Length: 114
Length: 112
View (cartoon, helix red, strand yellow):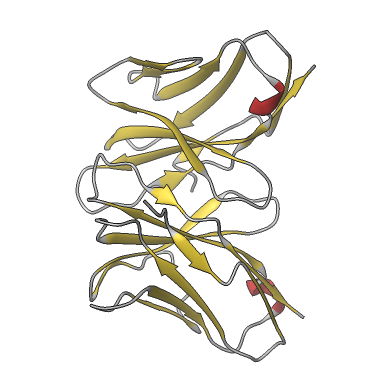
């Protein structure tokens, strides 16, 4: 009964490079959420996806960030041309359904941009 | 525009006493509320939840109280243990395809 799996746990990128963060939801969960936690801040919603669909991306920065959840394989959060301000912990969560349901988080991916 | 507010960034409590963590919300459409606990360098762990049709939910040492008229909820931990030291996040969601909205968290320190 694996939980939400995220990889890599730690990622270091130079400014201008691309970062790809992967998330496999819990078994039986078809809803995936990405949250970001900046230092000394709370959890900020980024994007909510179901298989092959982006349901809500209201929290995603307009440029350089994208997310997908393909029919097969993990959800991927992609950050192009990273800048120092992208350094944060990125958490993925999954749930069976939305509305009135608990979401379960992975261990997080810590991105450091140098 | 913070819809979920945790106004106390930190709280210190002696072991064995009660810890009370507070949370306020502004969106009257919220109907489901949760508390998560987070240790450093780990993901948030679900602790307890409450639906808006209830005003109390209890699970072992943890009890969540909801006051809808005041748009306020609280988490009570009794008795507090050193292992409870962590950051606690309050979260809320509304009906429909809406994601959880989190507060900024309260760091609880339980002193032995």
